[in-house]
Image 1 (cartoon, rainbow, N blue to C red):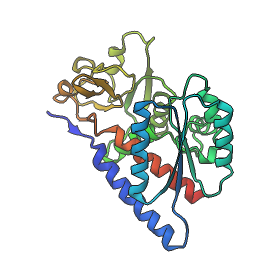
Image 2 (image 1 turned 120 degrees about the vertical axis):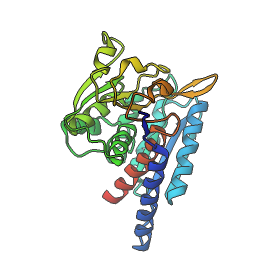
Image 3 (image 1 turned 135 degrees about the vertical axis):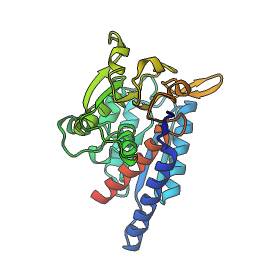
Image 4 (image 1 turned 90 degrees about the vertical axis):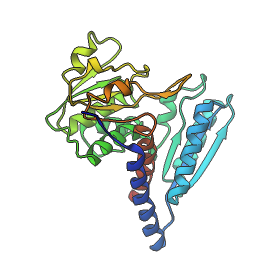
Length: 281
């Protein structure tokens, strides 16, 4: 058996095609296209790459995008004032602050400065709280992309044993709640979990999001497991994920590649969240 590929690149392209057609429908009705405002503080090289990708993605579907580049030494109060002005701007549908932020800034406080209805990253406390309670909300982009990808390939989490490796607010915790909402039985493992392999060997679905290159090995999964790799680790030989992809291929039933798996889905879901925010407005 060789695992089939959960192709995030192809799936994201289909999502973008759908979004572009929805934008055309809005414009044909005399309405403006969706608008995403992005703020980047400082000169983090990876952040610059991610912001550039988001700008290109907006252009590809007909969105308007606004980019605010702020110096590394920008005071937090200045950033919060900028966010408030964008909260009040009726021409802006979504606001995204690129993380990480400089040391003088409190990321949690900055995120709270974004109006929940414009929080297209899905990180605002109101959105996260509604997610936990199973109420309507803007779902965080990467977890939403993972569930979208599973659905696209006909993988239903209902009744399955799912293990999530990593408990971050960005991926681990929210994807666990989204899997719970799909009636999976979820185990959340982290750095203090004893004998992680004991849990992963029982799992029908494993989501690896802990930032350790090739952490999940073939000996740690059961035959036919579905593997979702969220990791992006830059090594000398290039990008690798949190799973040992080549050695898992003969044992897993489905697996995401790195790159080309979850990454493209994250940006596609950002666009989808912005479109949905625009429609609500």
